[in-house]
Image (spheres, rainbow, N blue to C red):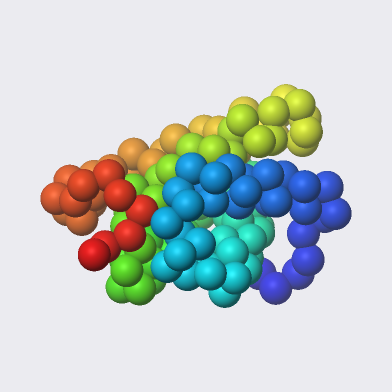
Length: 133
């Protein structure tokens, strides 16, 4: 999974990251430039895993990735809510960018992953905030 993403993902990743930071300015205060870089890297990883799921037409690839990533992020003070919020920004950002079939499949994989994340105990017990206090 270390291969570079196709160049056309760069503006999509930038748009998603910027929209997250626009909506959650407290992320800048808490995580600074390092957090911004992680947000970009995380979104690149999201697209790598979406591409992997698409290549074999298996949503479970992205669901498993989402669960794994959520475990890591929540151990570092982030919340499931923020990951879900990030995932839910992707369909609008890719609209008319990747081709109808890929966009539809990515949206399906994201929806399945979001449903899996919403079923976690951590999601149901926390406020809808980006990070744990």
